[in-house]
Structures are given as structure tokens and as C-alpha cells.
Length: 152
Image 1 (spheres, rainbow, N blue to C red):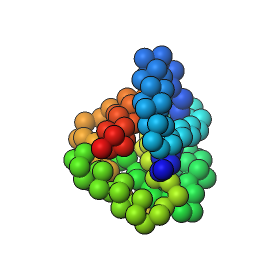
Image 2: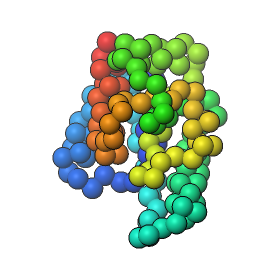
Image 3: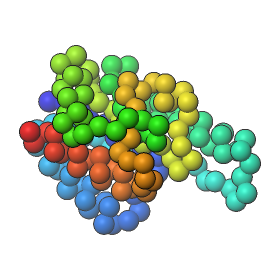
Image 4: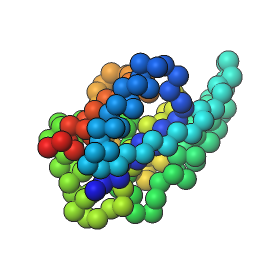
């Protein structure tokens, strides 16, 4: 049984996302375990300078780093990541299981992005698309892919 950790910034406010996330977690938890670890998103002041934005990124990323276990296989969802098919994604998860990692941790950063330190901690950098999606929708998409590979 694999533990999947979704480490993300911000809380889901929309009921339609929350209900979908709950349903997907219920399905995944039949064979594996999924845990969603949310940290508060920092308030971004209007007309924030680049230095202030960088400080926000660092604070949010530090909170995410604290949730990663020493023996976690880490997948960062980021624009500069590689695109994988569902089959390739499943192979990555199988390799993590075979290597007996305690968990597969997925990182979803805040609206300003993720620190270089957090990206460097990742074993795999993954992109779902060249398009930009709301972070809430990204959780649903990620959980659905996890559900698909757990059902195989």
C-alpha cells in the first residue's frame, strides 16, 4: 500500500472542487492512502515588489519542505517539468514502490510559484500541460491520474 501525499499551498474554497477531491480520495483510499497537506497561502500585497514576491515564495516553499519525509519520493508539478503519459506516470510510481520509498509526495506551489530549493528536492519534475490551470483544478487532475494508475 502506497502513501500519496499532496503537498500544496492554499485551501480549496469552491465546493465543486472539494467534493470532487473528496470522492477521488475515497476511491484511492480503497487500495492505497492519500493525504492532502495544505499550508496557508501568503497574502500578496497589491503592487508587491519582486523582493516581496520572492520572500512569499520562500515562505510558502519552506512550509512545503517541512511536510516532505526523508524517505519520500518527490514529484514537483512545475511548468519546466517534463510531460508524461499516464503509462509513464504509472511506471514512475511503480519504481518508487519497488525502491520502497515511504511515500510519493507531490508538490503544488502557490500562485507565485515554487522556490528553487523546493524544485531541487524533487526526484521528478512533472508538467501536465503548457497551459496554466488553477491550483484547485490541478489537485483534481492529479488525484484523478493517481486514481487511474491505482486502479490498474
